[in-house]
Length: 164
Image (cartoon, rainbow, N blue to C red; front, side, top):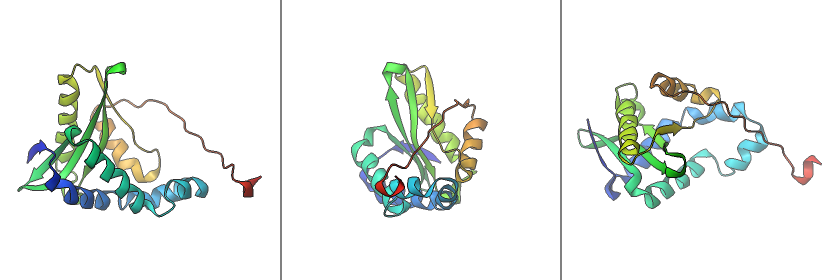
């Protein structure tokens, strides 16, 4: 495995592997959140929203992205954002092709993200993920990688006219 800086030739393979990686997550997320919340975030389906969000990251933040290659083909990627006001790096996106999950690609990408943040003088690295059943493997991975959980609660209330 080799980790390289992102280049435009990686764009389409990274989008495709990301959607494959999140395929099992979203049905479990959908059943774990209120219908109005899921429909608000994903009115055209999760694939549409994920694709547009990831396209924006790949197009707007190419210098923040590292790509894991196996046999010269993308196997995963990480986007690292820096928040100097908090002396913090953020693993903003981490995705590994399901074919390569459990082989050390994710750990190598997280390590690259940590190195990126450390080299810029950051004191810590943060990552967010869902607390729903679909994100359970991600939580286990981050906790197994030494990340400590921060207690956060996010609440939603439907306020559309039909609920009044």
